[in-house]
Image (cartoon, rainbow, N blue to C red; front, side, top):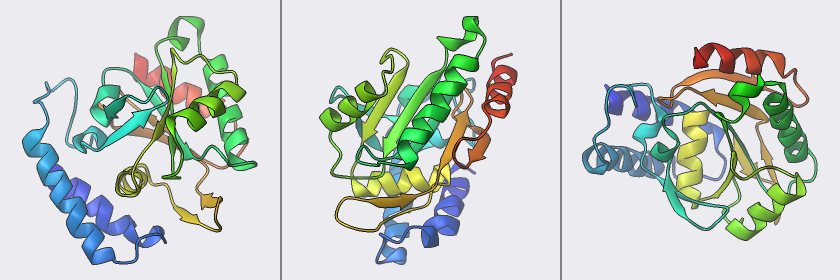
Length: 211
């Protein structure tokens, strides 16, 4: 069930990613990595993951402190996730503003229990550039994480999150403007597409998931 779910996601979404020159080869790699993930990753309790959890993928990324982390490390708390890149001058600052509005709009007792995550679609982004990006938006790194990844990992994450992206020149990417809410098991429970969207629906989804 787990493999079928993830492989179906990958197969249905590959045509959205223009950076993949060989879709069949990419699908084969993704299938192999998903199979390895189910064999190699530590066993988790039923309360931590489910058949619909994106945490079944064991791809590693580096956070803004240069530490290698896996998706499953995000389990156990509700997470808000988006994808962009540090050099982005238009959409990504607005995505950051949208996530900060969600954070500030949460009930105070819940605010510190929610994680906010920015995964870069640019494989040239470094932990240092992403930390600088986070600093420029005055975030509290106790609750915010920024991740750099390899091209393969970026594609896997984009597939399971439903993010479309493509390189348009030497430094810029076109990408979906999408906020995704994951529950404690890593299941997608809410998506909001677009920039400067209302924070209230995202907040409502988080509050309901926290009950």
